Structure formats: C-alpha cells, structure tokens
Image (tube, rainbow, N blue to C red; front, top):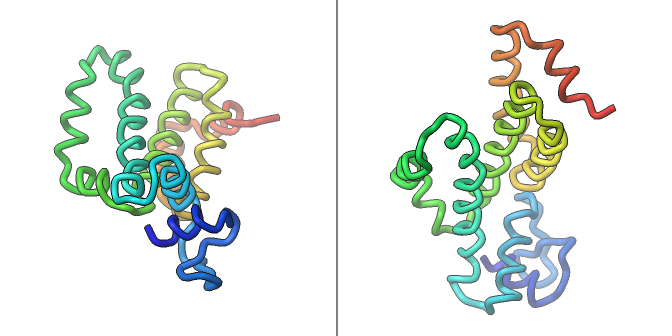
Length: 170
C-alpha cells in the first residue's frame, strides 16, 4: 500500500518505490498501479488501496457468467462457491498481487476454451492479452500455472495442432 501511495504522490508510474528514492523491483507493477489509481480517485485511505481487489472479484463473476449461462447454471451457484472459499474471501480485502493473478489466470483459461470450442474469434486475442496482464500481475508464474494444464489437456485429447491453428495470431 505504501508503494502505491508513493506512486500516486510522486507521479512516478514507472519505478515503484518502497521509500522515497528507493526502488522496489520485487513485484510486478499491475497491482500497485491499480491501487495508485484508486488512491488518486478515492484519496489516501485503506478503502482506496483495497478497492481494486473488490472490483476484480466482481470482474471474475462477470467473466464466468457466460459459461454459467451456457451450462444452464444460475450465476448464484458459482458466485456462492467462489465467495465461500476462505482464501478468495481473504484476498478480496487485502492488498496483494493474487487477485490480479487470479483474474488473468481465469481470463486465460476462459479465452483458451472459448477460442477452441466455441469458435469465438475474440478468444485468441483475449488469450494473449490475458497473458500480458498476467505477466504484469505476477510475472512468469502465469505461464507456469496455465501452460502445463493446457499442454496436458491438448496431449490427452490430441488437440495440439488445433491449439496452434486456433490461437495463431497470424
């Protein structure tokens, strides 16, 4: 939170600082940017710093809504499941990079599924945009967490060639 406060105060959006003039390179900047933007809009307070995590939790529900609708499941069921997971509920109210990571992971998996099975053309663009957001959220961990499950799925169901054809941006 202090890094975001200093960022909002100094206007230096490129170099996160743990203290004035002391750069902080331990975490990717996306969560800090979101908290700093929230501080700029809502002022310097705990609510402003935590607000981006709450917004991301709502975005996650909006992201899973079309899938729930397609499966003929009321949105209240996945929402109930999501909001009763203690770790998720904890991260809705804390300042951390985990909510932005969760949003990008969910977006990657949804886009992967949409582009392969539903034939949605926006899926492949959303996939790569979500990978970029994930890299800004938590670094290469996003590739480590999504790459192996997608590769194993592709090998099990013999869809490796289909993945390259559907996700190709050229």
